[in-house]
Length: 97
View 1 (cartoon, rainbow, N blue to C red):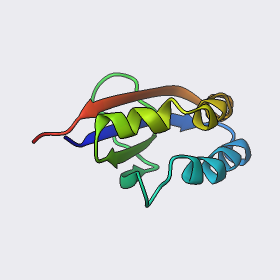
View 2 (tube, one colour; view 1 turned 90 degrees about the horizontal axis):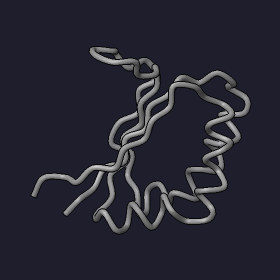
View 3 (cartoon, rainbow, N blue to C red; view 1 turned 60 degrees about the horizontal axis):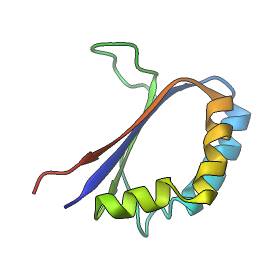
């Protein structure tokens, strides 16, 4: 069953975020293991307190998503993302079917 990683935040330091973004693509194996389903730098708030930027990545399985997210290489990048952003959250959900 497919899985989706949804990450949302406000970018506060574009330069530092650029460092994170440049490193995260290869570490998350974008285009190979993970596919970008949606990327919106101007997410429209409907409820709660989300940030303005949302990224949705799809994976073939929950295990594949967890393997990437929990990898040492990606775990080293999370503090960089946190330094560059505020109001961040990440959720991993199962797809349908």
